[in-house]
Length: 451
View 1 (cartoon, rainbow, N blue to C red):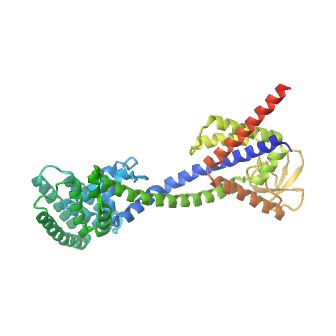
View 2 (tube, rainbow, N blue to C red; view 1 turned 60 degrees about the horizontal axis):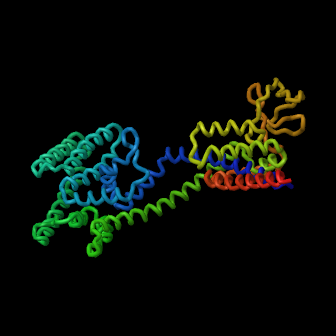
């Protein structure tokens, strides 16, 4: 038994699993992209973190986060949010919480949930009108034009809300209910702000951290869970000012750590979900393509030409690729073309054969056999007769060979599990094996030259 032969068989198997893994990676990326797993998981995580759907919508429509959206119309939410942008956007929302426009914005986001219950064209038109109103609230929040300009913008916003109520009578009870709550909360917030002003001697905005604490006091009315969580993160940050580190910087670090800890848990959950998908796809691809690891290993062991050719292709692949990334369809097609040129036992259906009225087909050796889905003798070929052609089933045991089919299932299972491990995993192992084989060849060559 030659060590070189064993290494070549190993290289051929590893390369086959690598190619299978590349196919699974490509399909998995396509599925995940279509389903929007990353962005939807992140959105769910942020909504749970902020404990309020309206606040989550306000967060995602903050300019810092809106800039992370993708798509031609920015409709695709981000699949990743840097912790620095998370803390900055959330602190900005908290700082603006005392503003009347911020409370109106939250009320409008709550109203959006009611509008989504409408059906057909009414829902779309009402949402368009609501989005116009939301744009006005964002402008009011960002405006530095003085209180008179802000009041003018607020009057326009309230006019748009009255118009929405008049245009869609079905929404009137919902709008009245939402804005009754708004009026109650506004009075509570005004009382809180008046108390803060009395306690601080009329100067509540001395620092950014003071503004944030003022905003948190307002959130005790509208979003008490967020207020409690963020306030806990700010506890004791003033102690860092004695060491020269700004309290706001430490507050940001605490908030970013809170976000990152949750993201770590989310990443672990996503990896487990992705691994489950990879196993399902790996088994599916192995079954569809009929990649039987046991049969392939046998073929490589018995056929030196196939073994050497596949080993050479593996070496070429390593030279052309320093690392492996998710391939595109063209790259996979090129690899498939190279593989099909070799006599490798992959696939279920062979070259179609023309059959006559009695389903008899002329074989390559000139003999005739009957195409049958359940062959019972050597005079029949295992195949699917469709139209005037027989599609022979290849790389499969006889229909009544139970042991052969059990081994086939084991071989397919091994291929599916191997494909789910990921192309980088097999790429690294393949590189090490080829390096061992190359160094061994160099050593043998040196010894021969010395003689």
